[in-house]
Length: 307
Image (cartoon, rainbow, N blue to C red; front, top):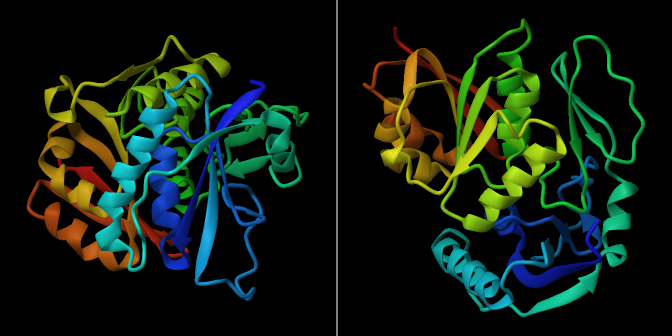
């Protein structure tokens, strides 16, 4: 585990916590806490607990990235989100260096083994686990920049993806659009995909995704690119896009174009009230569906391309 991490603090209206945390994760955050409550862990906050109107997010990033560059990237994401979150004030956050033990140990109190479907197991590196003959184990360490999979948008994607591998071998070719820390790409590989391509516009996120593939021994099957979606070649049996509703809608033509006949398209990062926006964008594109699953205020839409 690295000894030093970069920490930023941001004041966010309570209603915008999930959106801001989603963007910070896309930038490669190693972990996020809200006030004294862990956000991206396996403990679900008490829904009846009184929540202040504004909360402080603490986000942690790998130390090798540029502090000034990180601050500018976060400021850009906040400015982009401001019209979507009433009361959010874009700012250039201060970046400070903290020791790993100042925060990472706290995760161990809340981060346990998680099973998704009948085969996928997400295991923190310090937990002993003896896999069964059908188990596909994804090992995580909060000392690495890696979402745990408990956030609703990621969990919905993982559940849809794992369902495709209930009866191996499952899909061989997978594309993960906006791969971020790579949890979906690596999950596909450990479940049995033979070739997984993750694409992202952020160089740090791409490096983090590759590091996590190596951590799980699937680096030969996971590739990551900064190339834009429209420039990618080939067809994929599964296309994943855990990005915001507006981006899913904007990229609809390219996402469908990359999908092989009879392939599955999994779209997440969609607020419930934005479902129709996405449904309209993917109408009349030769797709069957969507099948919709929901957790908290988030939705996941799954389509299958007509053969």
